[in-house]
Image (tube, rainbow, N blue to C red; front, side):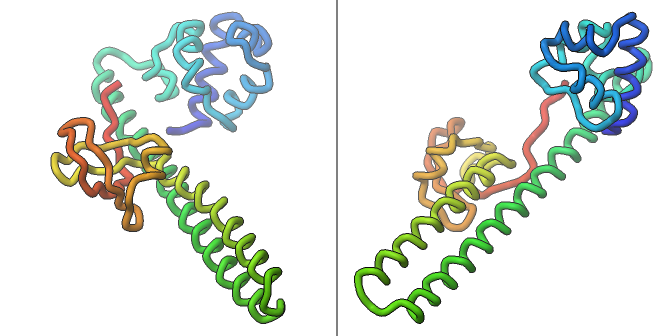
Length: 207
């Protein structure tokens, strides 16, 4: 999606509706700075207010995300292109989050082993050495929990039995047995518990 094009389109539709940025912001219950960011291509409208924005500007969601008016003849083609763009955007964001997760895990593991090694060298054996090592291990768990949250937030887990893509809750993923990013989850479709492999591409339904 071209945010600059979408921003110009929002600005044009707003002006055709004889609305200032402040007036549009008041109708949506947001600040005029948010409207300004949209129109400059610096941000996108939040999904929670997208339908209301389209209603005010008398446009469809497809037109908003395409950044232009869509004729009936070009509607199907634009829908297909829009779905393709959305799929690419989701995939790009998923890969970014996925990379961040592995960076967090890598840095945390390195810090854990380095902390334990340095503590064993510099601190005499005894209760204080044990306390510090336990403290380092506890601190290591914090980024691990955050990394799991990132893992759950992208893509889905594919059921080995029926192929259904599962998006579990954080607690379900936390308590599930796992091998790396493959987790033992219960599939809501086939109702069987099996090893589900992480996949980054989720199906995108038609708009």
